[in-house]
Length: 103
Length: 298
Ligand SMILES: [Zn+2]
Ligand SMILES: [Zn+2]
Image (cartoon, rainbow over all chains, first blue to last red; front, top):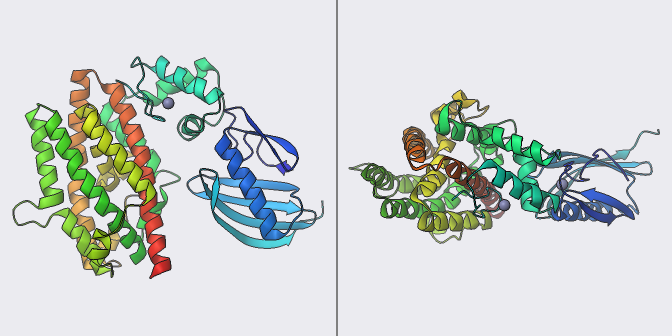
């Protein structure tokens, strides 16, 4: 899964040393809460879109404000917003569906 | 005794090394509370043990401007900075639901407030502190002379936007409000009175008129709304807080600064302030959450 963060897949922090397999890929997280939030967010995204897999995700925002994301799967693309509380998704809103530009 | 601002644990020594070492080892083991605290307050980038220590030194340094101004600066960064608290953002132009959420959660806050101040009176021997808290309780809760107490103005503000006082009185605080109230009750009943004092009165900075002179991008609300855009009772309540909290927090912070120096408690006071401000942050989120609940229900 292509991501915009080099640190923790959810928040980009480089503290901590927590690893979890998400979508068959071993990913780095700063803590278990970020890992749970990321995994729950991906599952929610798949159930809302019907996607079998997620090819890329880019995340902008923080815990308090919530996070704006763009995700792609094949030629499909969605923009969405989510918020979590202790790793559980408390708000999830698809903002737009579209097709990703052909690379 | 100094505490860790992230978990509240009492630390053996009141110095930067013991604080920084505590954070470093817990961050290495991916402890969520400590990693998140570092992410939000120090840096998202992992650094060496020595590097973190020097960042903590900088973070706690109040030599420029003194302790009270350090508290103001940190408070402003957290609540009125580039990414303000979401409730503060909503308060700029509050809807009636914002006000309803405010009234409901703040009612519970004030009920704890009076107890917190009373604990301080009971646990100090300094008459100036006792007098200060005594006046504060009177103003918030019972009214001085023929002035209406703030808690009554609060309920009237709720009624003016259609929120019956029975609903407020019969409500239970939301989760983050409840955990904050529990925390303040514990600090004020069990810890040093000065820790209690900084934990409570630093929070009055939320309505300080002067936050913009400490670098805030926002103030609690846009002063224009007092002249229209909100109900008369809302304007009345906000104005009372606005006029009072300014000298309240100013006077209290000056006392905190003076006694912290005399009693050698400066670092401890800083940590208690930081921890209390985190609980307050969550409490303000509860106000917003409650407002959203009313919006769905009504
Ligand atoms: Zn993270
Ligand atoms: Zn700690």
